[in-house]
Image (cartoon, rainbow, N blue to C red; front, side, top):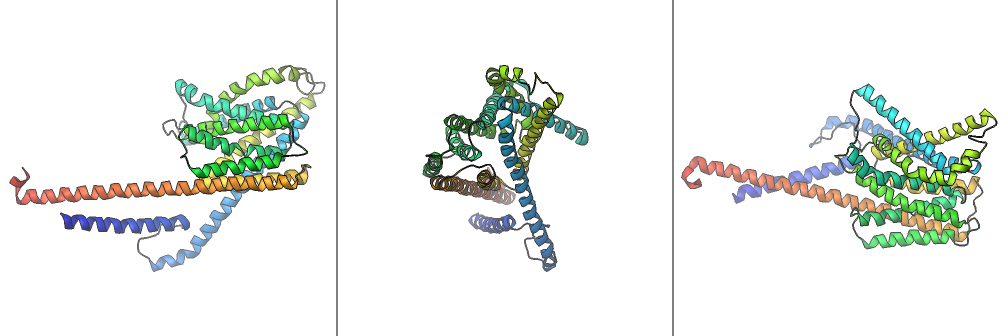
Length: 405
């Protein structure tokens, strides 16, 4: 039995080393064909095709990142420009939510007609308990973010909103989604220090706008933590963003509608740009601008999902860091935002903190994958041992049945 167990263990370990090596190769090699266990000289002719496939994957990733940048940065500057003239940000967000709900419903219907498969529809208890907190937090996050555009610049908005990583870490620790590590203190300290230096003695600082976007950042941390908990529950079936958008938009409207009625109800009912219009062209132009913003917001969410689907969460996080840099550059270059030397140092410190968080998250994810792979091979080894013991018992039973009694 010992000899057979040693042989099975050595064979399992050797197969484990071979498979782990092949998985390591597959991670860095994008091939058109599956790599064989033994090298085949005929596959050398396919090296050029594999290189083409690798270049195509690289170009696809760059294209998805550019698409994400266009919609994400575009909606930021577009909303800032539009709300400067149309001072009803909460009403604009509610219109966006309604349009996104309609577009996601149309996509679900088209999918059902083309494939014949029915999309997920949640029952009412699950819909109330699981999605109500996520929807209300998402509505307040987006509403306060758009409201802050009336008071602060794009650069201050971008820097302050980047602190949502701090709140995401806090809520992840609270709900048990993140492990407690001392490195998190360094990340939080760097981001907080960078934000302080960026806002210290800023000539374009506005306290009301800063508090609005900081509250939005806090709600964004709660929003994405709750959304992660919902999406990771496979029994709910909301892994597809179109289904998630479709189910969460009504709750977002419910969460934002009371604020819109209290702060913008009477003003929007008496404005000449909507209800008390004098020319129909003014109303149609306003509705057209709102519709454009709604489509941009919907496409931004879809492009973010596509980038996550075809690459990884690490790629999305790194793209998010460079997106903030691009946004700040465009804000200083084209919208007249001013930055002092101290503000620039604060920007660098904050970006270092965000980058450190991305690196630590990637390393932690890689360690978890290795641990899961190791546990899988441990289970395989134990299964091989059990099979070897069963085989040996069968042999003993055939030679001496009485010994097994």
